[in-house]
Length: 516
Image 1: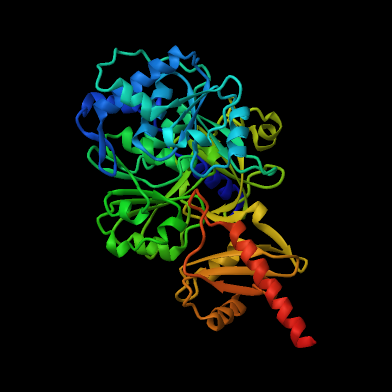
Image 2: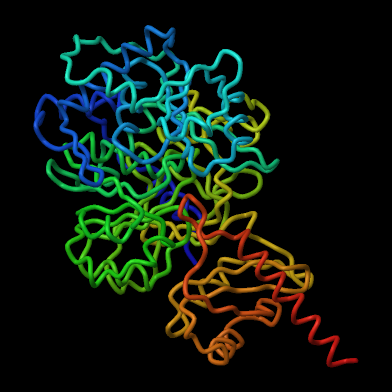
């Protein structure tokens, strides 16, 4: 054990990331700098369509002028309800140039009731969409809809006047709606300062350079999609917008940002050209990190939407003894605290609170929830806030963070407190297990899903029984070819739970038949 005084000095040393000033305070200013430097480079490509930095800038200026003419005011929220496309980029940049914030949703798959909720919650008066998706857009009184593809056809190749960017008094860049406890999503206000801090400093910029190709494979309503889009456009790279196939997109790029579940379906041996990979959004299996780090710089990252995409990153080296989520990124901090918000010694597991420039502006029109999750930061002071991530973690003696699942991932089974992610981690150490997810069925039963489906269930059970106490042993271990995913590329736990309940009901039925 280390003396508490020594532990405290390490906490002060480990908690704070380096101080680095981003090169711009508005993310679209970084894009405009690339327009000046590299106007002819390809900014984005989607199938057989391409657009240069110069043309993307010109079209977004035209849209910005049009939004202002329609009455858009600095600080307004404007809906971007469409799909991955070049017009999506024009929409986003045009909104930012007008001084407003964008609210992204994939109109193909987001339910109309949810879109309606978002329009009302964010007080949206203008929505940008594509003509073939207009029928899915809820139109309330006073809400105007622009078909961005039709608008772009109308402006053609006209030379647009220079437009002075308008100041956004709130500093909000975009509003992302995350899942809420009531079933309706909560909108998180992300500022330009938040975004520039992670994307215009290292390692969040992922070393992207002009002419690199960055994949855009994620749902546009997912915060990591902003990482894809702006990392490319603020560094002179080409954003490769995928079609139906994620694998085909990754085969053509240098930099990939994804969830572990998405990457698990891609063969790294066929993608040795990929230079940089960053994963976040869910726990990363060590085998996945080992396989991809053979030929690529592999970053394992962590951070909820409320801390601006990610606030910790780890450059993983192949075959390290353990996989961590690294250290705080520049101008950010992480505290491991107990229930009374006191720092815990090195090596003790506690709840992670995030501080620094990553902390967002709170939830839109939800003061109660903002007050619950955002607190005054006693370590930074000076009016700074810290955010309760509800992730469990601890510091290693080397100053890296180990992730131990969610506080809401703690469940009671047979009267014992159990960490679901810990069981999955043990499963992933079993031979041939690529990925595992463990769920609670009821107060007596756990179920684990594993990939691939060739895993020996007998060997897996023996391995678990040799390591875990009896109450942590899943009642069912279900092998699958691959896990179902949500539209954000994460494991679809709801679908797996439904499947587990059906399997349990079938097992109960057979048991009753045998008893009869």
